[in-house]
Each structure stands twice: as structure tokens, then as C-alpha cells.
Image (cartoon, rainbow, N blue to C red; front, side, top):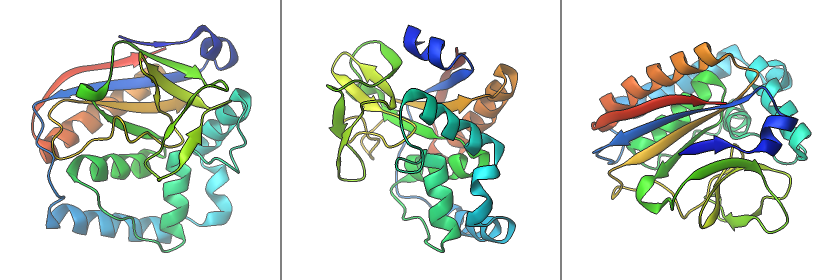
Length: 220
């Protein structure tokens, strides 16, 4: 079960999650055709955007405002979609991790929304999306210890493990992953639009990684 905390609902009444559960996926190094397509997509982004106007993109602007209202400076701790786009526009090609993580980055850039992907076998019990406190922290995929005070996060019985900023190593998807949870973080996005995005993403994801779509839902 995935829920939004009362605190999130009060401070950010237009904050939503889309959750997609996949079963029986096969995670491997990304194929040459996918890497080529991703490279072309990044070049297209550079032609159509520039770093001076990133903050004017509606989805990024809305997530930055969500960070502010939660208690985080979006200039110091950028939403992951914005951070990815800035790297691309600066000419830094994104490094590949595996077929699931690379697809997740592609979707995040396409929709300008933070995407998280998590190994279900590493998640303990129900999940709550909340705003972090002083005791919330984890080892991030960026190699740093991340303090989650004032940051939007996902928490299970073991503690915080994900966010629209950076996710944890504990629940990271590897080539050993068979079942996973994909989360789309959204602010000021209509439920129907978010569900449409989630359904499009899920179809593409299984084309790349196999497996079955076990569930797709919007959490509000």
C-alpha cells in the first residue's frame, strides 16, 4: 500500500504520485539501439532548450514550488528531472546504468517529472510519501549521505529510501531485480493526465525490460 501523509496532503494538496508495479522483468545493460535513440533525444533537447529557461517549464516550475513549500531550496537541492535536464543542456551525456534505470532517466527527461524506480524485494512493508524530519537520512545513489529534513520522501518500515531529489542505494534496481516499483512524482498535474503518462510509460518499460504490468494507479 502507498499513501500520502496528512502533512503532504495539507501542505501540498495538488501533489500526486503515479505508481506502477512490474513483475518478472529482466534488467540488463541497455541495448545499442536504445542508447542510440537516447543520445539522439539528448541532442534534440539541446536544440530545443537552454539552461536560462529551464525554470519556465511548467512541470519543473511546479516541482520547484513543491520543494519550497516542503521546506527545501530547489536551487540547492534540484528536483531530479531538472538536474538531469541541466546536465544534458550543459553537454554532459548521461552515463548508462542498466536497462531499467536508463529507461527511467529517459522518461524523466521526456515528461520533465521526477521518476524513481525501486527493487520491490528491498522494500519493507507499506510506503508513505511524507516530508522528512531530522532523523531521516540515507546513502544516496550519488554516493553521498543525504539528510532528508524538509525534503519530500518515500518511507517504508526501515525508513526513508526515495525522493524526487535522489534515491537511496538500499532500494536501487540492479540486474538481479525481478519485481520493481516505479514512482512518478507530480505537482499540479491532473489525475487523468498523470494516469495517461503512467500507462504510456509502463507500455514502453515492458517493451525494454519484459515482464508484466501488475498495477498502475494514481495516489492522491
